Image 1 (tube, protein in one colour):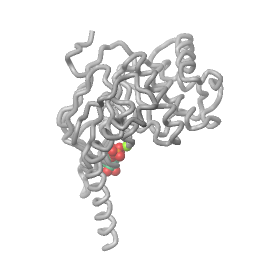
Image 2 (tube, rainbow, N blue to C red):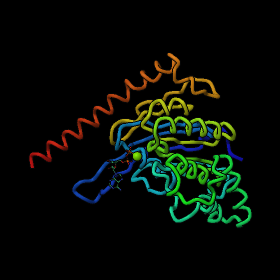
Image 3 (spheres, rainbow, N blue to C red):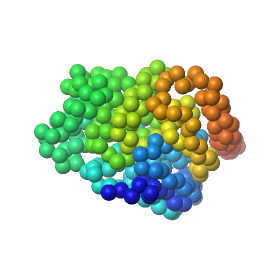
Image 4 (spheres, rainbow, N blue to C red):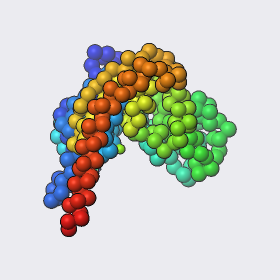
Length: 273
Ligand SMILES: Nc1ncnc2c1ncn2[C@@H]1O[C@H](COP(=O)(O)OP(=O)(O)O)[C@@H](O)[C@H]1O
Ligand SMILES: [Mg+2]
């Protein structure tokens, strides 16, 4: 049993410095603090390079923090409690669609037969059944990203980490995948941490939107999204939606400007050399 009063993910004074032992250490993140509730869909926005991916990799256990800690409160219901989806799909080009989805299950110790059954179920839910024997390079970007999502969901993780998963897709496809993801999430309310550079996407999907500062990324704001679920595509056209988005943008804009100023400074220093 999970204790529902405890956060599912809890980050305390998390920092990450890259190249710490060199003359040019990069303070990428933090100190960063964050609590995410069980079943919450939390979106993170912030300027480029502020440490969003770094934070996600720390939560996934792929990277160690230089200071502070991230705790995840797992119920132990899944062999792969944390799954990740990346912008560039991260699926194996030499495996078929079905084999890509089966792979994570078999690695987790599931029998071939059960893995196949589960893979086919999730391929069905993502509209990929007829493509199950295809190789990824024969698929469109949208289809490849569906494969990555099917693979992540098939392991029935307790926590789903998504790093700008729709950033490479065109606007219409992005909207369709957002709606599909919302429907999937409504069905079993996993804890989701979703990074995006689109405020619109963050508001359409999230229970809460976190705005990070420019590098080293810290928490600037954490705002509850005031719109009811299930959310429909028409929400985007509502005046309240656009007012809310404009309010968030006022905060984010300052951080993006700071990031741009730093870029200019770096360029000028480069010119002087
Ligand atoms: N392995 C690494 N070595 C050195 N610097 C890194 C490494 N990974 C990321 N960085 C730097 O850390 C900062 C944060 O990166 P990242 O987390 O990818 O930002 P974001 O995802 O917000 O765009 C950037 O300045 C980036 O260049
Ligand atoms: Mg990133």
